[in-house]
Length: 426
Image (cartoon, rainbow, N blue to C red; front, side, top):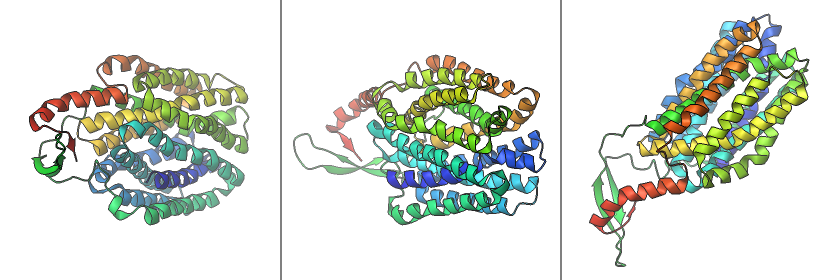
């Protein structure tokens, strides 16, 4: 399952990032204002905002395979629509369709990992998914850069073809019967549990009433994670609208703009697997907090540095931090949302919060950049700094490591085990 999801993610992101870096320049060449560029770029995230929470719930209750395929189909249709677009209104509408498909696909993939991978391996599993994303980010801009903003129609068609290609491993290699993993396979109100006999006898099956209302999802741990999602969304929205414009201000060519995305991805890819291991072993709260501080520094530095090599160097530092922060946040989210009976809801809420912040930032960043190129980057950096300050009090009672979470779960289960004389296995 993990191999299929990583391969499909790679193909979808490759197509997406063949478009994204050059789209603002393509729109400018069609005499669309900076504010109009912001609207079109934000439309992608508006589509994701509309689809992600529903996608998370659907993937958790009905299986992720159908959501993955529907998301890829919607994205491919949006690419074909961009190819045939005749104006900025249709551009924005097709970006909404693309975003809805890409958002649903991403949430379904992350929900599948959260629901089926054992807690001690989730850091590395999420790192695999993000490695597929970053490989697509590394290769896609190079493909788009070769075509250039004057041949974007070919890039639109190629991106749609990549989405269709991404659906093939999902369709052929992910069996329909494997839609629901261990954490998703018991939707009924009554679930059979096997109670193992400590005297060596055979296990006995009993039926235990599971028909209880879902527990509160928005606890302090999840609230902190939603702050992370909002901060990441603000930064992403600034990059979507302003990065290519900032590089062009400093004299970068179209090819070099695409290369900056690739150079950002390379250190992430190098550190991804060790970062996943780190997340599975160390306190994820501290890993995320330190990364937020690193983000506040790097994001603030970009408009102040007029040297492209220095900007690329800072982006590499940011990539190393994100290689740790992304799987750490997802691993902690899987832990905290599962404790609230809402793996799919948690993934959908996290993604919706992130995307909502991205929509807002992408919409206003174009206007802020036109007023002063430093403004959007500085405001995003301040958001990262404030988030880092707020996390320690919010996460004071949150289990930071897998071992702490398992110890806490064991302590809660021991009274029931004493009464029944055994350990519970689904």
